[in-house]
Image (cartoon, rainbow, N blue to C red; front, side, top):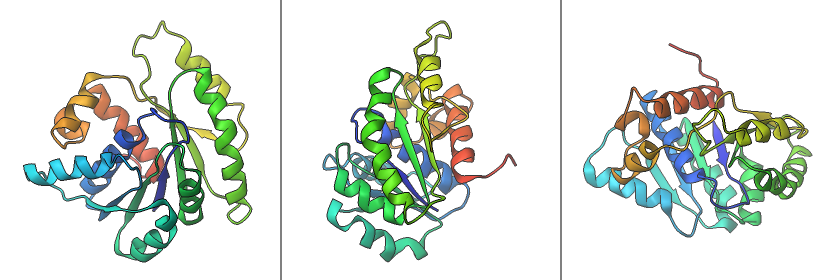
Length: 216
C-alpha cells in the first residue's frame, strides 16, 4: 500500500503518526519504507536514532524533494509492501504529487474548528485527484485528543468532520499523551515503548483500519 499522510495545516502530528504506523507495519513482517519530504526531516531524524540504537525491525527511509515525490514513489513501490509518504505542512505541490501515487490518504488533524476549516484547502486537492482515481479512500484521524471525556471539543470536531463529503473518520482518536512524545526520543514506536498502554492500543486500532488488517 502507498499511504499518504498529510495535511496542509501544520502541527497536526503527521510525522508522529507516520512513524508509528511504519513501526506497526514492520512488526507485521511487512517491508516498510517511509518517505520524508518535510524540510525539517523529522522522520529521517527518528529513523537515524532508531538505527543508532539498534532497534528492530528495520524501517527503511528515503528523503525526497517535493518536485520528485511521485517519481520516487514509482521507483521504489515494487520493492516494499507499504510505502508511507510524510508530506510537509503547506506543501501543496508535494501533496498533489503524492496524491497521484497514493492508494489511500490519511489526514491527521487536531480537535477544534480551525482544523476543520483547514480542510477547505485540502479537499479540493482530493477532488482533483479523484478525477483520475474516483475511488481514492481518504480518512481523517483526530490526533492529540483530550483524554478527559468531559471535554467536548473532540466530539464536536468529529461531528463536523462527519459532514465533510468524501471523507471517512478513523474508528479511534489518538490521545494527547506523554508516552507518544517520550517514545520518539528513543526512536521507538509507542507500542514498543509501552505495549500495554492506551496509546499503543489506539495506534493498533488506527493501523488496522488504515491497512485493513483484522485482529489476529
